[in-house]
Length: 230
Image 1 (spheres, rainbow, N blue to C red):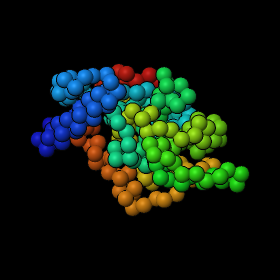
Image 2 (cartoon, rainbow, N blue to C red):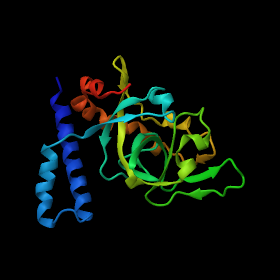
Image 3 (cartoon, helix red, strand yellow):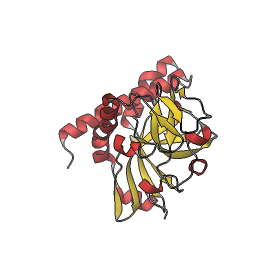
Image 4 (cartoon, rainbow, N blue to C red):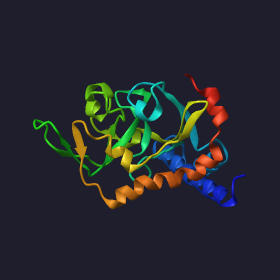
């Protein structure tokens, strides 16, 4: 049974999501001033804060598994460094084909200095609203990983959610560790991000606490198993 405090946090998160999503569609010109309040309430009482995403490929095999997995993803309507954190596993639109989605590790955000192990490449700083994403599978060569080492920085608006649970099969599933320590293992090829701070370490671990109530309310392993494609 879900505790009352968990429900309170969940409803507060739904309200925050509804306001953020309504603001996004309003700025985008999709709704008028008179529709904002109705849109907020509609989003608050309808739908979920999560969606299911099936992922295949070798890029995230070390985390998701070699056969891929079904992922529970928390929706993020307006991604920025206060909502997604370095170390998070995120779902984002493919910057070269926005009809497709990728699952990658958020490795750096705006203000980070990126330095290459290749002396021919000049260091650069990620600009406002830019981020750097990487594959977890270190056995792949950079060109095989299809991440920011291939297509460069990505705008934060490409991120649509944070992965919070992974089902590899009916008996192998569990929460995803969106942790700074996992990210450290993912930056060994080509580009390294500098300016790690205690605040970023805290933020990365903070995402797990932010998602715990959503996971408790919306996780349905049976539904994930039905949608799983081995």
